[in-house]
Length: 166
Picture 1 (cartoon, one colour):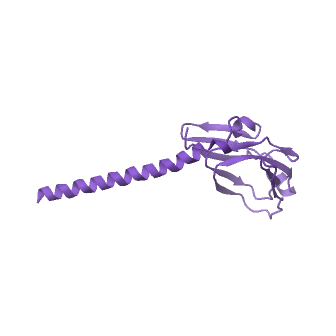
Picture 2: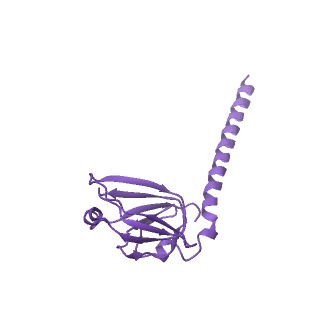
Picture 3: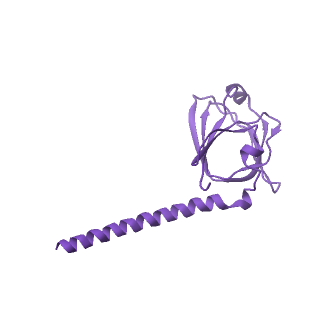
């Protein structure tokens, strides 16, 4: 009977080990795939290299890179760049409107996001998950009145990039 209990225990351990190994393989494949698609992420166009006026590294290690991202002044278009890794934005929403922004893609298409004049509300934290972003440039067309007064001196957004494949 002791031998059958040991055999059952060994089988459980093998099953647990197989489950852990297969889970790690699936997760590893997922992150490896994100980090390997170089066609949409050409060298020399990383946001920090290509758009240094609006993307500054404030922390980096082998797992994450934290960028302070600032919105350029109205009438400005930041250079074409990409964000290779999945990330999330952490922003203190000051409670006013949003600027008029045009999101330019390398194929010449443009996504227009008109400004909004939202009612003023108390500030709150905002968190947004982002998949890797291929080549793009942001053009700031203009700011609504509430955004220009409430965002003056605003340090920008934090973009925390999760490094999938160094």
